Structures are given as structure tokens and as C-alpha cells.
Image (cartoon, rainbow, N blue to C red; front, top):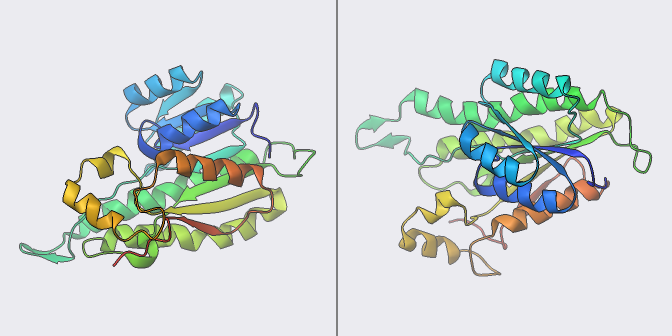
Length: 252
């Protein structure tokens, strides 16, 4: 799909991977729509790109449905949905104070896994209303964000790894279900990317993670995620697959 002139919805668009992807795709001619809980920052990003932002809690069904209803009333029908919203708290299953509170585990699952599905289901229903593109016969593309922690989670990542493993697991069945409507579903599993969340960690922690990358021996760049998302959108043969973006990193 040539992205030029099409609406692209990005969740978690106020910062990190979402904001970088919004900037990158806007430069390619996309019309940007952002979902984020931080509406003030999301508005700043959207306004700089000539786009629009909505205050949305991806884990809340009513919040997502309301935002899509507002969009369609304004004749905004995204051809592309990129789910970047997520959280990455680290907590041991059994720590010094005893077992992790079940609510802590549930919160991560609710945001990362349920939130991804929540947006994906409404985005797919919205894309079904669009006409197929002449050049590719597709109606839309959905790109979800997992993590290499889905495969090699570290201590303290039980909840996070479970949530991202769920995103990985949804990829193929969702692609199979939506194929007859001309909607592709892909997932990117980033390694350690230099986002504000990562930059806030102690330098020693960052250095330890970098040591686990094969090549290049550095943290990933947010724009490299954006570049891959752009390629997925434009390459119609990519469907139902999870792509690791990690410099061959295997977390120990």
C-alpha cells in the first residue's frame, strides 16, 4: 500500500515509538491520527504534523469506541493502525514483600494485550467499510507491537512477557480471519530501543543490555521501528508474521 494521503492511526502516539513513527510516516505523506492518554502531548505532536489526536485509554472499550465514532463522524477512516501503546513495569512474581499482587499482573495484561486487541477489533471493523485499493486489493494494515521479551523474558518480566506473548499469538489467527476482507496483520517485536523509558534506566543497565546485541552493538533507534513499519505497510506480501527488530539480540 502506498501510504501517501491515507489516514494512519497510531496508539501511544504522544511519545516513544508512537511519536517517532508518526513523524516518519507524516514525512512519507500519511495523514496522522494519534490515540494517547496524554492528550496535551499528543496534541502537540499531532499539530506539528497536521494531524489530530484523541484522548484514549486503549484498555477501556468505551474510550476506544467513542474515539472511533468521533473519527468516522468526521469522515476519518484509517487504512493503517499501528498499536504502540503499552507499559513495561518490572516486578518479580515473588519479591521481598511476598507474591506479586494479582492486580499488578492484570494491569499489564489489560493494557498491553487487551488494549491491543481492543483497538485492533474496532480498527478492523472500520477498515471493512473502505473500498479495496485498486493496486493491491487491500483495505488496510494492522501492525501490533510485541517484544523480544515474548520469547526471552528476563527476571521481573513475567507479566510483560505474558502480555507480549499474547500479542505474538494473536498475529496469525487475526491475519487469517481478516484476509477475506483484504486486511493484513503484522507484529513487530523490538529489542531494546532507545526510548525515553529506556533512557531513564541507569547507564549500567543500558550497557549490560547493549552487550547482548550481536550487531550493531547498540540500542535500537525509534526511527528504525518506524522504517520497518513503513516497509510493512508498503509490502503487500508481508502478512501474519512477527518480525524481530533487535540486532540479533538474545536476552539472557
